[in-house]
Length: 295
Ligand code: NAD
Image 1: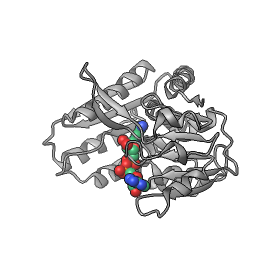
Image 2: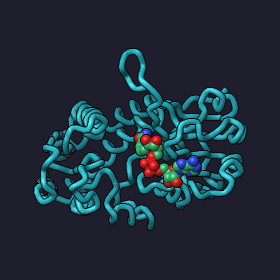
Image 3: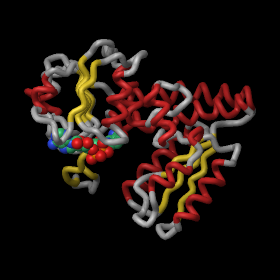
């Protein structure tokens, strides 16, 4: 049976490391990392994501501003708010929770964030830095979390066949590029597959590391997994409601049977999800070091 890669445990270890860095920043500069989370409207999923981010930031001792705005804020007002935080020296990271209401152009908003405070790593400048391997940028949090899990699980990536299912801008595309880069936790041979791929199964079967980010429950069958492979299941699918009222979640991989074949596998929940938040905090701490060091 596969080793279960616990994102929850890895998150705890990373946050512990970050606590030490926050203390070091405080000692050296007399201040702490600053993060603002901007939430527009009251979408329940967004509220719960932001709440968790705020709680984690406060727990690490960050200066944290939770800036909640009404659903009917205008685009201009939101852009002005971002400009305010771009110019606020106590803020090192700006996070705008997506999705935004339809009357607001998301791309315009993301592009308005100072790339050096874009701790979500969604700004085109940071995506460009990622592509050329420039470490001044911020890596997008979910792909960064995936790579961190692969490294911390002790999986060899150099020369490994990596198959990524999905080509979205926030997961599939960036993780494909990152795994193919030169460097630690990379140097892999990457295949990115998607809805137009002819033989999904044949590709998955070749993978030493299989990263699945499709958003389709049970898409990946156990017999598609190469024995001993490392399987990273990014999917978060609501498949029902527990008697308690809590959402029942499943990944994109048939976990119960897949874990009998894989060498290492991430669960859902408790896998990639917790790592995403840890990487957001890590980016914010990195941003604080850079801003304070340059000041
Ligand atoms: P998306 O819908 O933007 O992209 C899904 C991709 O999967 C598409 O590129 C599509 O080509 C591919 N795909 C879909 N169905 C397929 C099929 N049948 N065969 C082959 N390819 C197929 O989704 P996303 O934003 O990349 O998210 C993917 C999943 O990861 C979702 O379940 C999402 O909830 C989850 N997610 C989790 C985290 C986290 O922190 N754990 C973060 C982001 C996304």
